[in-house]
Every structure is written in structure tokens, then in C-alpha cells.
Amino acid sequence: MKDKVRNLVILHIMFMIFSLGAVASKTAANSEFLSLKFCFFYGLVLGGLFIYAIVWQQMLKRLPLVTAYANKAVTVVWGIIWGFVFFNEAVTVRKIIGAVIVITGVCIVVMADKDNTETADDAENTEGVSA
Image: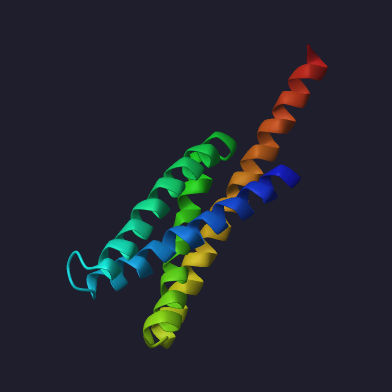
């Protein structure tokens, strides 16, 4: 259980970093093409994607695909936060409701995965006793 929580924390930190790539991408898009600022922020996007790809593969080894992929939806919440912090975008009631729906969905999937894991563990323990 402790390892799963640690893996979920790492996964969410990775998604936070991944979502910062959108900030760098938007900043690059607002810069003159091939300027130093454009190249810097575009490089940040590529570097972030490189790190994301490596960590994502490691998380897929440690977590069920359904859990890992469902948690990816949390980047929507990070997008709302980063839009507000870096670009002064409005946080509306609809955006908050949408974020709550996303987080609720992620929690449901993670809890369902927990139930399936416990059921599978119980089945393995039962098989070991009867054999």
C-alpha cells in the first residue's frame, strides 16, 4: 500500500511537470519564431516531454494502466491553475465544477482499482490455503 501511494505521488508530480510544458509551449508561441526566448521555451517543452516519457514508462511498470491513465486527467486541473497563475485567465464556476468532476472520476477509478487489487490478493491467498 505504501508503495502504491508513493507511486501515485510520483505520478502526480510528473503530471504537474508535464502540464508546465503547456505553459512553456504557450510562452514560446507568443515569442518571435526562432528568437532566443522561443528556442529556450521550446527546449523546455522538449526536455519536459523527454522526462515525462521516461517517468511514464516507469509508472506503467508499477501501476495498472487504467489507474495511471485515469490519473492523467488531473492535468486539466493543473491547466486551470497554470492559466490563472501565468496568464491571468479567469477561473470560472464552470471550470471549478469541471475540475471537481475530473477529480471525482479519478478517485472512483483509483478506488475501484484498489477493490480489484484486494479481491485479487484475497483470491491468491485463498488458492494458497486450499492447495
